[in-house]
Figure 1 (spheres, rainbow, N blue to C red):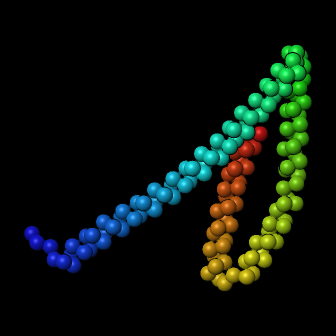
Figure 2 (figure 1 turned 90 degrees about the vertical axis):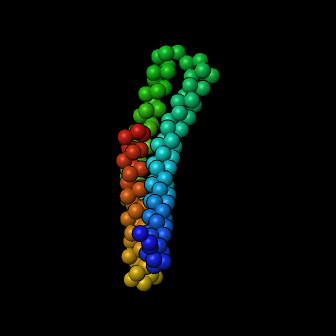
Figure 3 (figure 1 turned 120 degrees about the vertical axis):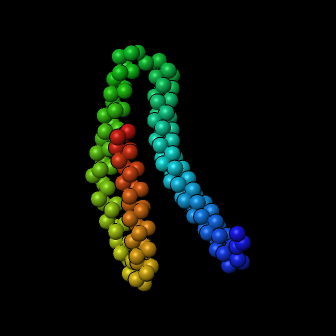
Length: 138
């Protein structure tokens, strides 16, 4: 069975297309994995640093068990106050962001607006995902 030059070219084209699509998909999935891993690692690093700071303070101040419990309770209460404050202030940060998006969108043509909307939706999804992860851990 003999293949013509055109058939060989089609086979090579299909092989190259499959390879390129595989590479693009692999790259995209690697980027997604790394972004997820780095957000988890960042949270773990913050928690570890917080525990290390507390332990250093406990040792340097030579806190008693009772003092350690009380200081930990104070820090937990403070952390909850910060969480509440962040939740109260979030809408104030959303307003300027939405204004900026509207101004940028007004500068774009219809095709650019579609792409911009997709980018914004992706950023919002990533932001909401991080918030959901952090709310469970903070």
